[in-house]
Length: 253
Image (spheres, rainbow, N blue to C red):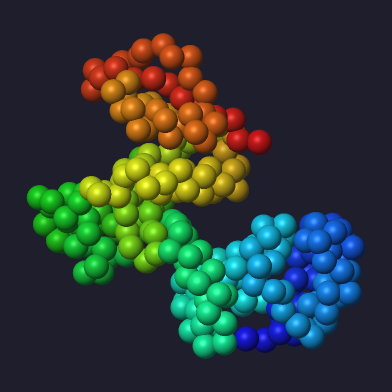
């Protein structure tokens, strides 16, 4: 664990958020001198201050201990390293890292390996041959369906794939997000986290509106869309399969 690197990272992120050392100190009810001590690598925040500091700076605990920003691919590897390193010195900090690690939910593309193929065969397409699943994953990773952007993600929570999430382009401004959680994985908040991650991706890709058709009898999906800020006129439409659906829309700021 590199205290100097961590201190430099705290300083850089603080400046990115246009915060002074005094403002950080006041929000955490500590002295400005203490913040300066962190940033010069002469000490680390007390465990009780780590989570509030990370929330203020918009970083994860794992990023704090790594002293750098982490993308989704780096997160788990760094988390495991940090848990081992920090755990040898501070049990309370280790517990914080483990808690964040277990709650972390990310999106990643499927890979044509035995693990992902087995998951898909078990939960998503039980009657599909392995070769066909391999081809399906390849098609997903081409990011194209009939000339429009399409991407399929695995929803991963603490290294376990708990469902799928798809993005499908309707036009240059409009996209849909489809979420399906595997059996036994519903009602644990994974859908909300995955949907918020997906909305961030849609925004980064330049889409302006997310458009959804939700079956009127899918109570869980209706609750999810309401929770993350979608709007509906509550009028009942028919989808292509003749099912009753509500239309949900969300503008991406």
